[in-house]
Image (cartoon, rainbow, N blue to C red):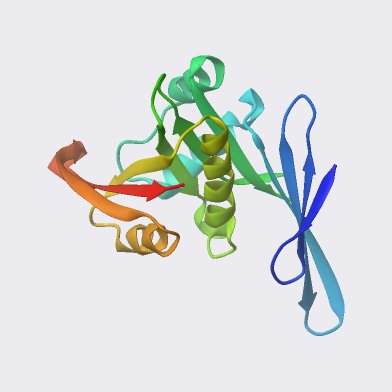
Length: 185
């Protein structure tokens, strides 16, 4: 077990065993008197998480939502990292990164944080974990595609080091364009 101190009273506890889990403990002072402790956990997805993942898809995406059979396929057969972030045993968000043989670039296939868990740093935590895993796979960069009209997501990705790398016409349903972003690891 390894413990790392993070920013502002947060600690990461990494336990390596049959599966890698990262637990983040955060103590917040609520109304000056009581301490509230939350447990954040980053771990590999289990089949029992799929219903919560479908809820996140409904919450986050208007079109091009992943379906149950796609989640199951990726979980069982995908050449990917498929992780979730939990807060107190509730799935807050997930990320899927894909790898190709003989490629030094990982692709974030999907990433989503439920709206009730946004602005808590989960997106950064998940992307940091995905980036570390990509490095372990021998990747030197990571890329993703996103809805070109999603300014909030674009600003978030650029803030953490992703750079514009092109545009894809007719990528999403209804002929929506995608913005290609890339980050050097």
